[in-house]
View 1 (cartoon, rainbow, N blue to C red):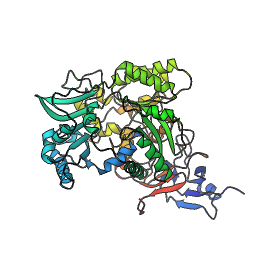
View 2 (cartoon, rainbow, N blue to C red):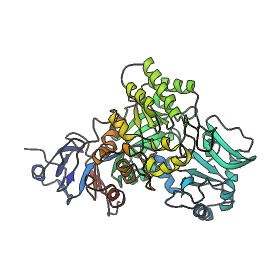
View 3 (tube, rainbow, N blue to C red):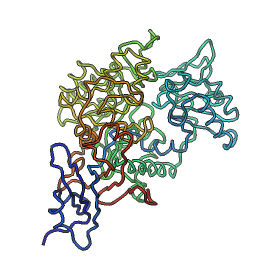
View 4 (tube, rainbow, N blue to C red):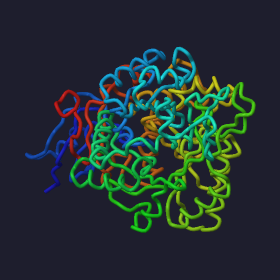
Length: 543
């Protein structure tokens, strides 16, 4: 007697993975793919207790893998003032949103806002401290740029942090002072001067954020993600919150936990002492890599570049840590058995990181760790060659070029800006780059990400290097199995093959046949399956 499926999806177009034949139906048993094939072939696996979903011609594929985001922050910022260009395209609109929040927030309590992009505001500049003062005179306000590497604090917030025009900037940080007066702009490590005074979320708040962020991902067909800096907000409490979320059924998506390894804020030592090293866990939640921040963001003029920023001949970005310290940290974490996934956007930061990886691997050869360069925005030919020789993988987010490409051109040499995140080049070299949102830097919605891979266009239509365009099947492979590969999870997820986990996303339009514009503007996820269970269905009360 043949095995009867627990779940069958039938009567659709099912893309099982790059190089695999399209199927009409898929059968699931015990949370894993039992078989795929024609509707007639799979019908034989349907029994009296099988749940059957008629796709009615819709398109199904492996669940998407967001290769780099901040799941806890994604949930937490839902309670912040939405300062994104979609919500506030003018400075006055942004200030109005802060005024509205101040009107219903008790005096003295913090107002947090996130998501502005100065080049997309009508004034094409950062807001000023005094403007935030006028909008919320009775509250400390911290307004964070979309990238998370630059914030504007009002006077009350600066006073709480003890920041004055004479305060020395911490190493790897910037306190902007013009004509002896604070503008309110804090970049990189200088943000901590104020952020450290913002109340830390409770354990219950962290669990609620994990759940809210995860449900948002499921609504987009994203079933797996890498949380890119666990410990950055609440230290080891975040590890506890993740475990409690999983134990109580409040972890909606599969997650790889990347541990914050920055000096003075690292949770790696505590995790290592508890045996929490790369690979520990199960298919729902695993310890992943270790993260160190080496520079900032290009749009925020803090990515560490070999070329000066436009109109700022002395500004090459921010080097967060000296070479010797980076090399020491990388060597230590590598020797402890961790994969590393460190933030480096500018070419100088990438060079610093690749050098540290090379030295660590030479000192402790053996198992290939598949170390990653997170973002890896502007590497150039020489660094790409060194990464390939060292088994080091770029881990980009193509959504950056969609959201911020025009800002890159505004602040950096145009040829350099257009060459960023060279997806086609990496693929041709044999790399396995994934993609993602870096949420809350970009929205979790995968459609702009896919659109950018297919067109290399920004949200304004600027083409950022047409020679880096890929086809739709490649884009889907990048968004599924390549993400799993980067996290060293390709053995059980990323493709719909017998024995692999049954994580499936169903879309309203056939992505293989749709135009990029149709994908961007007229396609939505309608159903998401995780481990053989329907966990999102558009139009239902649960959705």
